[in-house]
Image 1 (tube, rainbow, N blue to C red):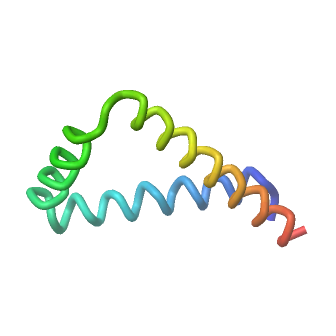
Image 2 (image 1 turned 120 degrees about the horizontal axis):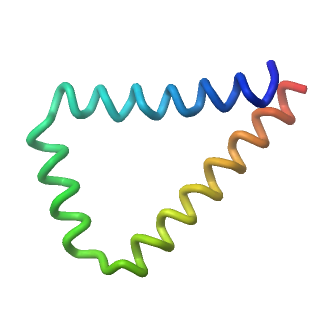
Length: 68
């Protein structure tokens, strides 16, 4: 399995998980997002986004290394 395959699986899994939540609990997800994001300023959103990207890339790199 190469890095491209792992990346596709990871991104596909993220989309699928997010889609399942929206499909089953649309009002709950909307309320949760609205509540969470209204309490955060732009700097906190930027930092949390960068942390998410770093964790995601790290996990993908680790998976690629473990697969070979």
